[in-house]
Amino acid sequence: MAEMAILKIGEEVYELPVIIGTEGERALDISDLRDQSGLITLDIGYKNTGSTTSSITFLNGEKGILRHRGYSIEDLAEKSSFIEVCYLLVHGELPTKEQLATWDEDIRHQTLVNEDMSNIFAAYPTGSHPMGQLVAMVSSLSSFYPESLNPNRTPEQQLHTIRRMLAKMPTICAMIYKKSAGHPKIYPNNNLDYVSNFLNMTFKHVTEDYEIDPVIVDAMDKLLILHADHEQNCSTSTVRIVGSSHANLYTSISAGIAALWGPLHGGANQEVIEMLEAIRNDGGNTEKWLDKAKDKNDPFRLMGFGHRVYKNFDPRATIIKKACDQVLTKLGIHDPVLDIAKKLEEAALNDPYFVERKLYPNVDFYSGIIYRAIGFPTEMFTVLFALGRLPGWIAQWREMRADKQPIGRPRQLYTGAVSRAYVPIEQRGAVTA
Ligand code: CMC
Image (cartoon, rainbow, N blue to C red; front, side, top):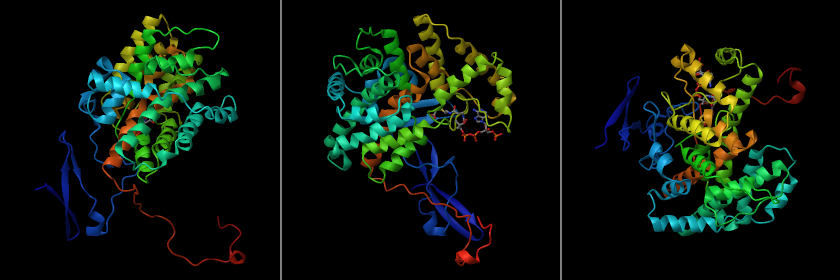
């Protein structure tokens, strides 16, 4: 018998079941509340609303815990590979050697994108933002693979669409980079692993060989793992809500990419580097910029700081900060913005404004410094976040379809004008708007 919570409004008493998750988290099930009482719940920005049950990712923001399918992010980042984490997220279990080999092989053989997609790229103005192109290109896949338009096909057909999405994403991301650089595209080389293939398509020039550096492959692999899923964030919730109307996978993912682009979400990684550069060009006075971030009349925020869920530390940021030092040392790079980032972090962590509001560096604070060391231009950073987040979006979309969840459709509390008579135009005052 489920534990019941009692809600008392005036003389009326309502009973609400308490649902308990596998990690002991408790939720009030309010799905019948409106039928019982006529009341809805109001929670602007979904700060305390669970939109779904899910068995993919567990996150405890107070303790800084992040686990995928039960495995800690620390273990996955250190011991796994991105392609294995993709399997884990989509299938729910770590693969056996054979399963991983088949998964890898199936994905490797679908990396080519239809040549006609190059014509779409050709139409974009040079210099247009890579994320706008990524949104369009991923949605375009639904036109090249019309069988994906029905998301309710057999599980094997659905998996085929999923593997295709995973396979083509690095190719599309690399094509976007080549377009921005004005260089001819490099076709996939299916002898290479997922990450090496992406780096090769991105950084190889048609006229020269490109030597794949294992330090860079490792760093990139780790960064992709660290972004692979993050439960019901803005972009993932978008993927779920778009997919809940039975929209196809490609278009649902494309909607998630659009949500990711915003500077409060994945777009923050680009903004962090731009902010650090601005501080450096301004003489490196971090106190001045902290004061700006604290000033409520100034729209500036300390980018890469704060999180809706993490209130102690972001475990991904801890791993990335360490990796950042290691990668730059191994590559023999000294980036002055890393010194500014560390100085800024230390000052913020000792400042009552940030301490009281529990604002800590998030995943985006140090990631851009590694991307930059690898050689990516700043505008590509959010594309790299999307490449990493792809398996998470896919797993969440697949889970929602498997659970046969209903269409997502929130309620609202109306605060506009009450019913009034239509006023013919000639009787309206001069200033009615
Ligand atoms: N700089 C200065 N003040 C901040 C910051 C910041 N980065 N973040 C939050 N605050 C203040 C905010 O002004 C508010 O203060 P007050 O209570 O006095 O009004 C308080 O802290 C709570 O902030 P909030 O905006 O209500 O918190 P939220 O949960 O709605 O927003 C956030 C979370 C991540 C959007 C926000 O912290 C932020 O804008 N951070 C900068 C952008 C960023 O780094 N985004 C990447 C997030 S991690 C990657 C991802 O998964 O998306």
